[in-house]
Length: 475
Image (cartoon, rainbow, N blue to C red; front, side, top):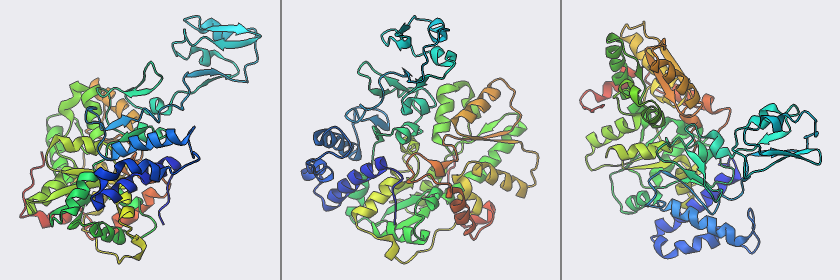
């Protein structure tokens, strides 16, 4: 039986399930206003100050499930009704303040924001500029940094705090990595959903709606055989379920060939599979954009493969990634993007019990294509392909998380990088640790490896033989 990682996930899921139920029944427009009362029946509150506040937040979550605010350009939004419980001020004097006579905190404050009252330090927040020098200078560590989790974890400083003490997102800096969504302990930042148009296509009876599952799905439904998950997805009305790992095999070949050409010209190549990493380069290192691989992502490659076979196909990507929702907007290859959380909500809304289903076979991909979901997987696949071609002199660098990506890109910027290829992943651990995976467990890497070993094909070339008669534009 599926378990929730935390209460925030459960609350979001409850809303998605109710929205999906009404959408499947064709009554969402008429009954959407009842969802806050279904999810928060009252009369007593569960998590907030009162039942009315809880219902207001649920109403905002319903709006996000129905596509969010069309006037907000980003994929993620701050739910103002839910963003009200974080500490207003970043630095706080704790009880461990001993009232020492050195007064280093006061002496090091550049704006005279600290006074000594009754032998204790006191911060004047009207003056404080949150520089942190007081904390650094305190010999007792008596000053706590309680920076909001969304701000602390945002790798691009895209989260700001406005005059109302609410979090706001600077979309010019945002790379849609989803760190803020995952880290907010109140679920006050959420991604826009596309479950409604997906349900509409499934309800239409179309025989051309396809699901593409990212290889990270092997880590998410660990309570049943993966073949039962495939069966469950088909029960929703999808014609077929295709592994995105097939697209990863296509990417491996094209990106490896591109790498050889770049090395011949003395130029470093960076991977293009993670849209947040690519966006980070574009916004933080625009001068390095020419180093980004021209190869499309596995999601795009798989979508193009499906549409080459069935021109009427409606393609739905299902994965662990919020930034894929942004990437989808770049081309018309992928029609919709769902997260694993949203897939689970669809299954629950249709009361599909995966444990009771017969397992169905997986579409095959290579071991290496499936390993794309973990940090280092792209590099592993590219290196193996090149070895099969007799190329052995390629230096690679695996960057696990934006912090490591930033270091590598700075070295590249100043021509000090000793590598031919950079694999960049925004999420530490890779896609299996994506912000909208249903759990982040220590067994995820093992689960992915077991799934990868189920592959019949042990190399990229062998997996790609079935595409000899199909041409896919990989740029």
